[in-house]
Image (cartoon, rainbow, N blue to C red):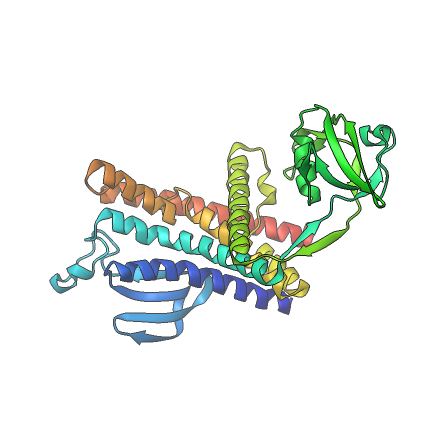
Length: 355
């Protein structure tokens, strides 16, 4: 329990700091005055005021905020502070300030993935045959346990995932396999078969396979600076794409809301990651950081995405959205967030006591 709480504080602290630092940095870049930079909500615990900014740690560690001068459109601003006012900046600058939080969370994930790939390389599963299912296309063609696939249709293969992707993309057309058996190189033609399977969401899909399983042999591949950077971008994109798909499926009802988790679930996962090692915990931070970025970009009032939506409308119509409309939207957004928090806490408690 202690490990989970400590890991949760570390994970949340890093994520909140980078998110709010993004808002803060771009705000200062555009000359907006920042009154408060807070990690956490509620009463101020400790902090230090530098210039006009009060850097603080607050009592409730479930978020953070940057309070800017003139952040509220209807706030009274002293004439000498107009040049520092958020509201008085061009709408494009306000959009960039708001978007900076989620963007910095994504940059954090890219930085973490880069560090992992650059210093640890990447683990590659060899396209080596572990088992061959009797009666399968591979069995009929003569593939045996221990064979190492080296090419498909004269294209070199270096990983199991690469091989599986090409086989699935064959759409049932015959493919030429080149493989090593002992010291000899052999070739044969094989026709993949279509079979029902389930994807990571538990949905029924069709895949083309040849009836083999991996031997689980793997090797570590070192990456240079540019390869590590490229892999970090690819990994961040894949995680982002997955998060967007999950949210879309949740909204469509394809995935049950029972799968949603809140602070308790994050704390448990953070604790498990910490027990698995520092590297695992750092990877977990990257995943949650992208998750936080995507959620914050949803067009829900009170989230960054909601503010961006208002600014986008303002940019099109040439004038700000009325205070009344914004207030109603904020109330609706807050209500939706409260419902979501109730749901995820309910799910967390249900998992603890009834699973």
